[in-house]
Length: 258
Image (cartoon, rainbow, N blue to C red):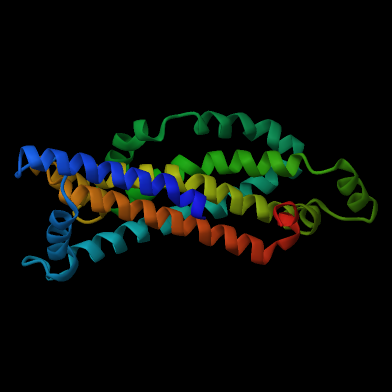
């Protein structure tokens, strides 16, 4: 942890050096705000209710974004697990629908954003749908490939003992797919945040992405930088939580890391 903190500390020190240099030349510089300027700008968003909504904007933005991200990631995870198991266990289904899943996975989800807004409106549904469409196909491919790569002997033994396809999915494939599912969720966090911020920037009235793109017109880097840092902290916290949960639930799958 100490070694990992060194590059971050160096980056912070570099920023402080550059910001100090710019402010020495121009005290009103807005491109690289100093920490006290960022704290003053964020104080209003953190502790002062908005005059129109009565909400604390920073926390309202955080709650709205996390809710959208949680719903989208949850739907994508369930979809990946169910579809991935079916595609991985049943070769005829994989041969039939595998190309379709691959085709959807390689489409840039941002290109579908106008279509989603036209078809689903500008509400929450379109934003959540973008997250699901953006990460679910990739997660499905990952789970399906993992299940399909399970030792053939396991499948043959289960069939010899009279197991049906459903039993193979639930008793053989599912337990071994769960650690991989947590891994796929971790890998999908980054893209999920990208799609969330993109959707909020285009059509929203609350959210972390909405606030960043709202204040950019005023060059309010004293708000943008703290918001970006907050998003990074949330993403890291989610990644660590998923890792710890996976290690707690499936210690046998993490034997090599201990």
